[in-house]
Image (cartoon, rainbow over all chains, first blue to last red; front, side, top):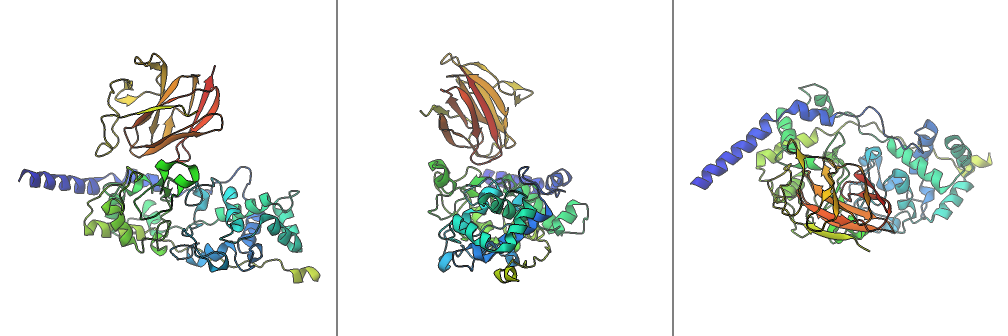
Length: 338
Length: 135
């Protein structure tokens, strides 16, 4: 009997925490920024962004001549591919899912294991990777030099620097920085429109920041602090531990943004969670696998069905009606002969 | 040479004590002002007689972010945060890795080489501590 009374009191306290939390103070942490973060060594310019856009959609810098960055980071699918794991050169299945480019300017680390800290460091990796675009970088430069239109585009974007690995990386990085999710109903609520999201979604937001512990990592306007964790997925992939050589960080993967998350299934580095309900079940259980590397921040949450539904309703308010991305016209060899 | 001296277990577990400050340990004193740790408290470790500086992890930041010590002195890294952290240094001249630190954990690291070292949290990449070690 004493146990039951204690439990009831505990649950009442948790509900109180969710409903009486100071939402106004919390909402300040989620305001949209007004500017895109830039790399001081690679300032955003219209010319570098446009060159990067062309390179992002350029299939001729792949070994097959068919794959571009956009083949996997598909703007029609929230800059992902909608697959559990990516598909690379020769249609081979890759071991990790394609992370979105959305709001990449705010990433403090790139790739699921965080091995590239800037977008410039990241940009050439998939082009050269044998399993992905499979294009040796010296061959990539040969291809770009052979298409006369690019010489002028590089000269406009990076005067005096030429067509180099560095300028290719800088241009792609700057284009990626401009891929930003639009204002979602959640943002309108943050700005003061109380009608923008439902009362259930507001309760879900409160739970997200309290009992459900999501905001320990999914924090700020982009809902990620770029941190790395083992959240208890069934996987042999060592993730960040493999990159750093730290056994204590085996199965650690980067915290992704939650912007447009309801449209970005399946979830996780290996696509192992098919739906948002599956993902909530994973966290509610405190992970599917218990092991030494499991994050100390992951633990059973004791969320009931209504609470889970409220959190999912809140997550859906993060979806924005984003601008459509049109395919760029690329310089061609035929044009060069005219 | 790995200079990790040892991980000091504390009485606070990772469950149910989010945001709590570590309690006073048996061997190491956490100096507090108004219940909060002060920055970089340098004091003598009575057990070994060596100087030990403290660096805290709080709100996903190191406190302080820069510190100067002498060769063979130690820094105790105290996780005073509500989330798990790590502390590592990946230099070729001097390196260490304390593994995962849940809230309340503390690790003691001896710096055996002179130089300027970047110490980081492998979980949160923007957490950076610059340690200058002088002869």
